[in-house]
Every structure is written in C-alpha cells, then in structure tokens.
Image 1 (cartoon, rainbow, N blue to C red):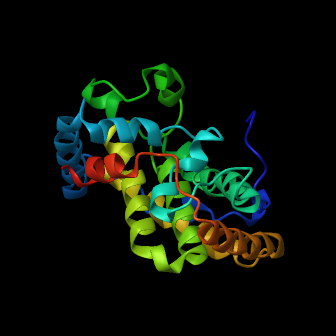
Image 2: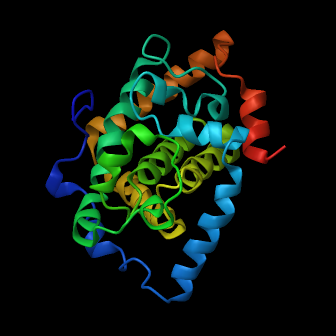
Length: 238
C-alpha cells in the first residue's frame, strides 16, 4: 500500500493465521453471543471521549500513528527525535497487519457494522472495510505487537504500555468495525509476529538502537505532544 513500508519478515516467514487460529464463532454459539453483547455495550460510548480516542486509534498513517503510544511511553515518538523507533513501528506495522490476512481472506467474516447497521468511527472507510474480512483484527495485531516491542524498549513503563495496547484493540470494537473475538485473536497474531521478529537480525539491531533512543529522550526530558491527562481520563472512563 502507498505509504506503508515493507516489514522485516518475508511473506513466507509470517505466522499463518489460518493455520494458527480457530474459526470465528459460529452463529448461536456462546462465543458469538459474547461478541454481540460486547458490541452492544460498546455502542454506548459513541460520542464520548473514549469514542474520540478510538477514532484516533483508527489512524495508521504516519506520522500520526507513531504518536499513539507516546503517553504510555512517556516520550514523543517522531522521525526527528527517535528515528530508529519510528522506523521500527512503521516496518512492524506491515509484519503484524499482513499476518492476519490468510484467515481474513478465508473466512471473510462480516464486520460488526454490517450486521448491526450502526455507525462507525471512520465512515469514509466503510466501503473499503466491507470488502475486508473482520477476523482477526489487523489493527489489534499491530497494536499488540507494538505494545510488546515497546515494553522491551521501556520495561519501566510496561504496565502503561500494555494497557494502552489492550485499549488500542478495544478501540476497534468501540468503533463498531470488529467483534470481541476478532480482537482477542488479533492479539494472538501480534504476539506470534513478535516471536518471529526476534529471529530477524535487522529487527534486533533496530530494537537495540531504539532502546538507546528511548534512554536519550528520557535523559533530555522530552515530553509527548499529546494531552496525556485527557487520554488517560478517556481510557479510564472518568
């Protein structure tokens, strides 16, 4: 896709989501009922600050997407301040997102808004999303991969980073474009990708450089440009 860099992993090295994941929940199953219940409850957040965060989380273009975890990390993530970290996020986006497509294409599960008829955070993307299978969630896979990678870079911020990674996936349910089970299995694929990445020398080298950039940014006292207090309140429901 235009603006999306190639990942670290070759296509044949990506985890195979069709082989790794169970089928999406069947109609009438308890898991399907849970999907529908979570979806209904999430629609109550439409128009709230949490909906605003979810809408922002839908943006995967850079430089905007790089800022997603800046509050959790405690530093800005920019091409100027942390170039290796910035590139690490850009490239792993492709790895994690593409890992979901063997299952997506096979199952072609209908997205939540196609079933319930309610609005989504990004109506301009509705037609594109209708043609893209719901299961598993690619956004969640890359968000969870980012969370795991950033936890290695900043273990002192692990809880905040992992909580933000969880919320990033849940944003897809709030946006009415995914089901709960899509998000759960998206996290699995994100973790599978990170496991594969650790055998890639280029990724490992960039990871070490990103760790140094984090320490330097901390030492310089660099702060995120986002309103971190407002984000925290929105995510906590306050």
